[in-house]
Figure (tube, rainbow, N blue to C red):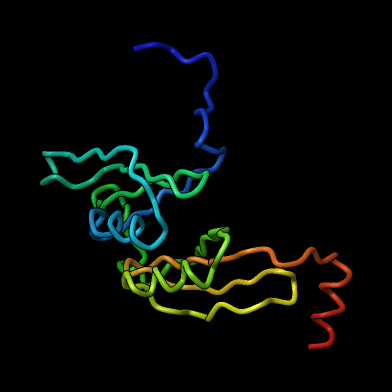
Length: 155
């Protein structure tokens, strides 16, 4: 093993990497590939745990997420086991309408439809079949904080 000179992993890793725990990691990986165009970098399955995925790395755009099967023995449970997730993941894309359509075709459900927002984004929210919510978003105009506040006051 070679010791690295710097502890931060190289791109496409960022300082924060979401780790999604789900019931059915293989199915979740297939969903993220179909819905979001994810590519799989690696998949580690533990034969002592019946082949459960303990870590899979997926690249979506310029970012990495990791996905793993639930492991109650490590207190790792997915959103469905917990009654939902308080976390919403923002996925910045060029065409949120197209990504939403792909995700819905792959089994996601709409939380709120894609629409132009007063803060200068076209976005909406979907929930994947595993309980995570994704905000699909694209910038459509640059809006100052003052203008956002004025728009909010007039709604």
